[in-house]
Length: 179
Length: 152
Image 1 (tube, chains in turn orange, purple):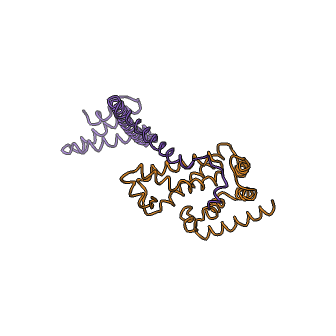
Image 2 (image 1 turned 120 degrees about the vertical axis):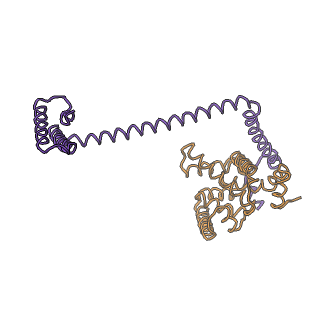
Image 3 (image 1 turned 180 degrees about the vertical axis):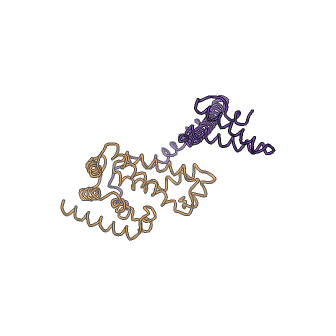
Protein backbone atom coordinates (compact mmCIF):
# COMPACT_ATOMS: atom_id res chain seq x y z
CA UNK A 1 0.00 0.00 0.00
CA UNK A 2 1.36 3.41 -0.99
CA UNK A 3 0.85 5.95 1.78
CA UNK A 4 0.54 9.66 1.20
CA UNK A 5 2.84 12.04 3.12
CA UNK A 6 -0.01 13.07 5.38
CA UNK A 7 -0.86 9.47 6.19
CA UNK A 8 2.80 8.71 6.90
CA UNK A 9 3.04 11.63 9.30
CA UNK A 10 -0.14 10.53 11.07
CA UNK A 11 1.17 6.98 11.29
CA UNK A 12 4.47 8.25 12.67
CA UNK A 13 2.67 9.59 15.74
CA UNK A 14 1.39 6.13 16.65
CA UNK A 15 3.97 3.74 15.16
CA UNK A 16 7.15 5.68 14.44
CA UNK A 17 9.40 2.78 13.37
CA UNK A 18 6.93 1.36 10.89
CA UNK A 19 6.07 4.78 9.46
CA UNK A 20 9.73 5.68 9.10
CA UNK A 21 10.46 2.41 7.30
CA UNK A 22 7.67 3.18 4.85
CA UNK A 23 8.96 6.72 4.39
CA UNK A 24 12.47 5.49 3.57
CA UNK A 25 11.11 2.95 1.11
CA UNK A 26 9.00 5.63 -0.56
CA UNK A 27 11.73 8.23 -1.04
CA UNK A 28 15.04 6.35 -0.99
CA UNK A 29 15.45 6.09 -4.77
CA UNK A 30 14.62 9.71 -5.53
CA UNK A 31 16.95 10.94 -2.79
CA UNK A 32 19.71 8.53 -3.71
CA UNK A 33 19.76 9.51 -7.38
CA UNK A 34 19.60 13.18 -6.55
CA UNK A 35 22.62 12.82 -4.25
CA UNK A 36 24.47 10.43 -6.57
CA UNK A 37 24.35 12.91 -9.44
CA UNK A 38 25.94 15.54 -7.21
CA UNK A 39 28.70 13.45 -5.61
CA UNK A 40 29.03 10.79 -8.40
CA UNK A 41 30.64 8.10 -6.19
CA UNK A 42 28.31 5.45 -4.75
CA UNK A 43 29.97 5.17 -1.33
CA UNK A 44 29.76 8.93 -0.79
CA UNK A 45 26.14 8.98 -1.98
CA UNK A 46 25.35 6.07 0.34
CA UNK A 47 26.78 7.93 3.36
CA UNK A 48 24.91 11.10 2.49
CA UNK A 49 21.61 9.29 1.97
CA UNK A 50 21.97 7.51 5.30
CA UNK A 51 22.81 10.78 7.08
CA UNK A 52 19.85 12.45 5.38
CA UNK A 53 17.39 9.84 6.63
CA UNK A 54 18.93 9.78 10.10
CA UNK A 55 18.38 13.54 10.28
CA UNK A 56 14.83 13.03 9.09
CA UNK A 57 14.29 10.43 11.84
CA UNK A 58 15.66 12.77 14.47
CA UNK A 59 13.57 15.75 13.40
CA UNK A 60 10.40 14.21 12.05
CA UNK A 61 8.55 14.68 15.34
CA UNK A 62 9.23 18.43 15.07
CA UNK A 63 8.33 18.60 11.38
CA UNK A 64 5.75 21.26 10.68
CA UNK A 65 3.25 20.10 8.15
CA UNK A 66 3.11 23.51 6.51
CA UNK A 67 5.94 22.52 4.17
CA UNK A 68 5.86 19.34 2.13
CA UNK A 69 7.74 16.28 3.32
CA UNK A 70 9.16 15.72 -0.15
CA UNK A 71 10.55 19.28 -0.29
CA UNK A 72 12.02 18.95 3.18
CA UNK A 73 13.76 15.67 2.29
CA UNK A 74 15.25 17.21 -0.85
CA UNK A 75 16.45 20.22 1.13
CA UNK A 76 18.27 18.05 3.67
CA UNK A 77 19.79 15.84 0.97
CA UNK A 78 20.94 18.85 -1.10
CA UNK A 79 22.50 20.56 1.91
CA UNK A 80 24.24 17.36 2.97
CA UNK A 81 25.66 16.91 -0.54
CA UNK A 82 26.89 20.50 -0.79
CA UNK A 83 28.46 20.26 2.67
CA UNK A 84 30.12 16.99 1.71
CA UNK A 85 31.78 18.60 -1.33
CA UNK A 86 32.80 21.62 0.76
CA UNK A 87 34.41 19.36 3.37
CA UNK A 88 36.18 17.44 0.64
CA UNK A 89 37.64 20.67 -0.74
CA UNK A 90 38.81 21.96 2.62
CA UNK A 91 40.07 18.56 3.80
CA UNK A 92 42.33 17.99 0.82
CA UNK A 93 42.90 21.67 -0.06
CA UNK A 94 41.47 21.00 -3.53
CA UNK A 95 40.12 23.96 -5.52
CA UNK A 96 36.60 23.67 -6.99
CA UNK A 97 37.75 22.81 -10.51
CA UNK A 98 39.90 19.95 -9.26
CA UNK A 99 37.03 18.35 -7.34
CA UNK A 100 34.90 18.39 -10.48
CA UNK A 101 37.74 17.00 -12.60
CA UNK A 102 38.33 14.30 -9.98
CA UNK A 103 34.63 13.37 -10.17
CA UNK A 104 34.87 13.44 -13.96
CA UNK A 105 37.72 10.93 -13.82
CA UNK A 106 35.69 8.68 -11.53
CA UNK A 107 32.94 8.60 -14.13
CA UNK A 108 35.28 6.69 -16.44
CA UNK A 109 35.61 3.97 -13.84
CA UNK A 110 33.69 0.85 -14.93
CA UNK A 111 32.35 0.29 -11.43
CA UNK A 112 30.78 3.73 -11.35
CA UNK A 113 29.16 4.46 -14.67
CA UNK A 114 27.21 2.13 -16.94
CA UNK A 115 25.86 4.58 -19.52
CA UNK A 116 26.96 4.89 -23.17
CA UNK A 117 29.50 7.38 -24.55
CA UNK A 118 26.92 10.11 -25.16
CA UNK A 119 25.64 9.84 -21.58
CA UNK A 120 29.21 9.91 -20.32
CA UNK A 121 29.89 13.07 -22.31
CA UNK A 122 26.71 14.62 -20.94
CA UNK A 123 27.77 13.84 -17.35
CA UNK A 124 31.20 15.32 -17.97
CA UNK A 125 29.61 18.44 -19.41
CA UNK A 126 27.36 18.72 -16.33
CA UNK A 127 30.40 18.45 -14.07
CA UNK A 128 31.86 21.51 -15.80
CA UNK A 129 28.94 23.63 -14.55
CA UNK A 130 29.09 25.70 -11.36
CA UNK A 131 27.79 23.77 -8.36
CA UNK A 132 24.39 25.44 -7.99
CA UNK A 133 23.77 25.46 -11.74
CA UNK A 134 24.60 21.75 -11.80
CA UNK A 135 22.10 21.01 -9.04
CA UNK A 136 19.40 23.04 -10.80
CA UNK A 137 20.07 21.28 -14.11
CA UNK A 138 19.93 17.83 -12.46
CA UNK A 139 16.69 18.59 -10.65
CA UNK A 140 15.03 19.94 -13.77
CA UNK A 141 16.41 17.55 -16.37
CA UNK A 142 16.74 14.25 -14.51
CA UNK A 143 14.23 14.54 -11.64
CA UNK A 144 11.84 16.50 -13.90
CA UNK A 145 10.81 18.69 -10.99
CA UNK A 146 8.72 21.78 -11.78
CA UNK A 147 10.45 25.13 -11.24
CA UNK A 148 8.10 25.93 -8.37
CA UNK A 149 9.25 22.88 -6.43
CA UNK A 150 12.93 23.55 -7.15
CA UNK A 151 12.33 27.11 -6.00
CA UNK A 152 10.91 25.82 -2.68
CA UNK A 153 13.83 23.44 -2.19
CA UNK A 154 16.68 25.79 -3.09
CA UNK A 155 15.07 29.04 -1.99
CA UNK A 156 15.69 30.68 -5.36
CA UNK A 157 13.16 32.56 -7.47
CA UNK A 158 11.54 30.81 -10.41
CA UNK A 159 12.95 33.46 -12.76
CA UNK A 160 16.46 32.89 -11.45
CA UNK A 161 16.07 29.13 -11.84
CA UNK A 162 14.89 29.47 -15.43
CA UNK A 163 17.85 31.68 -16.27
CA UNK A 164 20.25 29.26 -14.57
CA UNK A 165 18.80 26.28 -16.41
CA UNK A 166 18.99 28.13 -19.73
CA UNK A 167 22.67 29.01 -19.15
CA UNK A 168 23.41 25.44 -18.11
CA UNK A 169 21.85 24.03 -21.29
CA UNK A 170 23.86 26.46 -23.43
CA UNK A 171 27.11 25.52 -21.69
CA UNK A 172 26.40 21.80 -22.05
CA UNK A 173 25.62 22.21 -25.75
CA UNK A 174 28.86 24.10 -26.24
CA UNK A 175 30.87 21.45 -24.38
CA UNK A 176 29.32 18.59 -26.37
CA UNK A 177 30.01 20.32 -29.69
CA UNK A 178 33.60 21.21 -28.78
CA UNK A 179 34.48 17.76 -27.43
CA UNK B 1 13.17 9.15 -15.91
CA UNK B 2 14.22 5.54 -15.30
CA UNK B 3 16.54 5.62 -18.33
CA UNK B 4 18.21 8.76 -17.03
CA UNK B 5 18.91 7.33 -13.56
CA UNK B 6 20.26 4.02 -14.80
CA UNK B 7 23.49 5.65 -15.94
CA UNK B 8 25.16 4.98 -12.58
CA UNK B 9 25.95 1.56 -11.21
CA UNK B 10 24.48 0.53 -7.86
CA UNK B 11 25.29 -2.65 -5.87
CA UNK B 12 22.75 -5.46 -6.17
CA UNK B 13 19.80 -5.30 -3.75
CA UNK B 14 21.01 -1.94 -2.53
CA UNK B 15 17.55 -0.41 -2.31
CA UNK B 16 16.12 -3.53 -0.67
CA UNK B 17 18.63 -3.36 2.15
CA UNK B 18 18.90 0.41 2.57
CA UNK B 19 15.79 0.92 4.79
CA UNK B 20 16.96 -1.81 7.18
CA UNK B 21 20.49 -0.32 7.35
CA UNK B 22 19.15 3.18 7.99
CA UNK B 23 16.73 2.00 10.65
CA UNK B 24 19.46 -0.01 12.31
CA UNK B 25 21.65 3.09 12.47
CA UNK B 26 18.79 5.18 13.87
CA UNK B 27 18.11 2.59 16.59
CA UNK B 28 21.81 2.21 17.47
CA UNK B 29 22.18 5.99 17.67
CA UNK B 30 19.16 6.15 19.94
CA UNK B 31 20.48 3.32 22.13
CA UNK B 32 23.92 4.99 22.36
CA UNK B 33 22.23 8.16 23.60
CA UNK B 34 20.08 6.14 26.01
CA UNK B 35 23.06 4.18 27.39
CA UNK B 36 24.99 7.39 27.89
CA UNK B 37 22.19 8.98 29.87
CA UNK B 38 21.51 5.73 31.73
CA UNK B 39 25.17 5.50 32.72
CA UNK B 40 25.06 9.09 33.82
CA UNK B 41 21.81 9.19 35.72
CA UNK B 42 20.80 5.63 36.55
CA UNK B 43 23.83 3.39 37.03
CA UNK B 44 26.01 6.12 38.49
CA UNK B 45 23.19 8.12 39.99
CA UNK B 46 24.70 8.39 43.46
CA UNK B 47 28.20 9.28 42.29
CA UNK B 48 26.99 11.64 39.57
CA UNK B 49 24.78 13.58 41.94
CA UNK B 50 27.62 13.97 44.46
CA UNK B 51 30.09 15.07 41.76
CA UNK B 52 27.65 17.49 40.16
CA UNK B 53 26.67 18.95 43.53
CA UNK B 54 30.28 19.50 44.56
CA UNK B 55 31.06 21.10 41.20
CA UNK B 56 28.04 23.36 41.62
CA UNK B 57 29.14 24.26 45.15
CA UNK B 58 32.69 25.03 44.03
CA UNK B 59 31.51 27.17 41.15
CA UNK B 60 29.03 29.13 43.27
CA UNK B 61 31.64 29.69 46.02
CA UNK B 62 34.08 30.88 43.41
CA UNK B 63 31.54 33.28 41.96
CA UNK B 64 30.65 34.71 45.41
CA UNK B 65 34.33 35.04 46.36
CA UNK B 66 35.21 36.78 43.12
CA UNK B 67 32.23 39.11 43.37
CA UNK B 68 33.12 40.13 46.97
CA UNK B 69 36.78 40.53 46.10
CA UNK B 70 35.99 42.76 43.20
CA UNK B 71 33.65 44.94 45.24
CA UNK B 72 36.32 45.34 48.01
CA UNK B 73 38.94 46.25 45.46
CA UNK B 74 36.56 48.77 43.94
CA UNK B 75 35.83 50.39 47.31
CA UNK B 76 39.54 50.58 48.13
CA UNK B 77 40.32 52.10 44.79
CA UNK B 78 37.54 54.66 45.16
CA UNK B 79 38.81 55.63 48.60
CA UNK B 80 42.37 55.92 47.32
CA UNK B 81 41.28 58.08 44.46
CA UNK B 82 39.19 60.27 46.80
CA UNK B 83 42.04 60.61 49.31
CA UNK B 84 44.61 61.46 46.75
CA UNK B 85 42.40 64.10 45.17
CA UNK B 86 41.57 65.54 48.64
CA UNK B 87 45.20 65.86 49.61
CA UNK B 88 46.23 67.10 46.22
CA UNK B 89 44.12 70.18 46.86
CA UNK B 90 46.40 71.10 49.80
CA UNK B 91 49.66 70.54 47.96
CA UNK B 92 49.84 74.17 46.95
CA UNK B 93 49.08 75.52 50.47
CA UNK B 94 52.08 77.05 52.17
CA UNK B 95 52.74 76.28 55.86
CA UNK B 96 53.22 79.93 56.70
CA UNK B 97 49.94 80.97 55.19
CA UNK B 98 48.26 78.23 57.26
CA UNK B 99 49.74 79.68 60.44
CA UNK B 100 48.61 83.17 59.42
CA UNK B 101 45.13 81.87 58.83
CA UNK B 102 45.15 80.20 62.23
CA UNK B 103 46.28 83.40 63.86
CA UNK B 104 43.41 85.30 62.27
CA UNK B 105 40.91 82.68 63.41
CA UNK B 106 42.17 82.66 66.96
CA UNK B 107 41.78 86.40 67.15
CA UNK B 108 38.15 86.25 66.00
CA UNK B 109 37.38 83.28 68.29
CA UNK B 110 38.85 85.08 71.24
CA UNK B 111 36.79 88.17 70.67
CA UNK B 112 33.66 86.12 70.20
CA UNK B 113 34.11 84.19 73.48
CA UNK B 114 34.84 87.14 75.68
CA UNK B 115 31.98 89.47 74.93
CA UNK B 116 31.74 90.55 78.52
CA UNK B 117 35.37 91.57 78.73
CA UNK B 118 36.40 95.16 78.19
CA UNK B 119 37.89 96.24 74.91
CA UNK B 120 41.20 97.01 76.63
CA UNK B 121 41.61 93.51 77.99
CA UNK B 122 40.68 92.06 74.60
CA UNK B 123 43.28 94.14 72.88
CA UNK B 124 45.95 93.19 75.39
CA UNK B 125 45.12 89.45 75.10
CA UNK B 126 45.07 89.72 71.34
CA UNK B 127 48.43 91.37 71.40
CA UNK B 128 49.76 88.67 73.77
CA UNK B 129 48.54 85.90 71.50
CA UNK B 130 49.96 87.57 68.49
CA UNK B 131 53.29 87.79 70.19
CA UNK B 132 53.18 84.09 71.12
CA UNK B 133 52.14 83.03 67.64
CA UNK B 134 54.88 85.08 66.10
CA UNK B 135 57.38 83.58 68.50
CA UNK B 136 56.28 80.05 67.68
CA UNK B 137 56.36 80.76 63.97
CA UNK B 138 59.87 82.05 64.14
CA UNK B 139 61.17 79.19 66.35
CA UNK B 140 59.19 76.40 64.62
CA UNK B 141 57.75 75.09 67.89
CA UNK B 142 55.49 72.04 68.08
CA UNK B 143 53.19 73.39 70.83
CA UNK B 144 49.57 73.56 69.83
CA UNK B 145 49.00 77.10 68.66
CA UNK B 146 45.25 76.82 69.09
CA UNK B 147 45.64 76.01 72.80
CA UNK B 148 47.88 78.93 73.40
CA UNK B 149 45.75 81.26 71.39
CA UNK B 150 42.61 80.35 73.33
CA UNK B 151 44.53 80.58 76.59
CA UNK B 152 43.90 76.98 77.70
